[in-house]
Structures are given as structure tokens and as C-alpha cells.
Length: 155
View 1: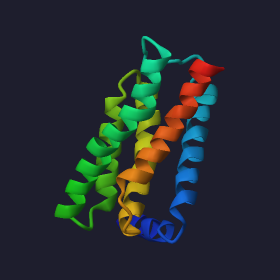
View 2 (view 1 turned 90 degrees about the vertical axis):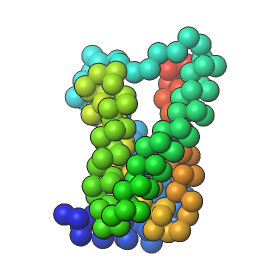
View 3 (view 1 turned 120 degrees about the vertical axis):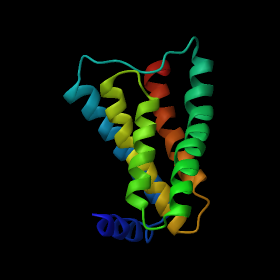
View 4 (view 1 turned 135 degrees about the vertical axis):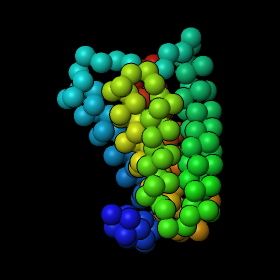
């Protein structure tokens, strides 16, 4: 399994980073639609904010940067530096912590675990491509959250 994961990272690293960011956003949207409308249609847990300004600042600016730094950069970075062959384990540990941090409900944690895996993969691909990995992950996370912000506050 580890070798397949490393092959996946290597294969994805051959693609343009802008395209990968786009794919991550689309994948995250599809997972959200499946969780929200197919698996758990009566479920609506998630962060609550006092104003749309607070929601925008926290969800679109602060959270993506802070979570990318704490979850992917710190955790994946630490594990991969100590154990370079443990890419899959690093990705799964960071995704688990990412999911647990979104403890609004079991469903929400499961959905964010999947997002965490995808963000972890993008982080590892960025490292493989010799790109500063915080940027593509934070950007994709921010755009995804911005789309969620728009559906909740602007529509």
C-alpha cells in the first residue's frame, strides 16, 4: 500500500500544480455534496459565526492558513523528515487530526477526514515538485471554504 501511495504522489507530481489545486477543490465539493445531500441530507452541523464578516475572515482567511500550517506543514513535515518512507502514514495521521479538529458531528469529522487526506496528498505532491507546500494547500482550502461561505451567506 505504501508503494502505491508513493507512486500516486510521484505520478501526480508530473501534473501542473494549478490543475491539482483545481482537482482538489472539485473533489472536495463532490465529497461535500455526497455527504450533505446523499448520505446525510438532514444534517447541517458546521461552524457557527456571529456575522458574515467573522465567517469570511475565519473560514476563508485564518482557518486555511492556520490549519495548513498546523496539520499538514507541522505534522506531515515532522513525520516525513524523521521517516521519509512514511508518506502514507503521515498523510493519514494528519487527516485524522484534521477530521478530529472539526468535531461538530461524526458526519462532519468523516467528511473533513477525507478532505484532510486530499490536502495531505496535495501537500506531499508539492514537496515532491519542490514547491513551497503551504501555498497550494492553503489556497485550495481557502477557495473551497470561500465557496461554502458564498452558499451560506451570499445566496
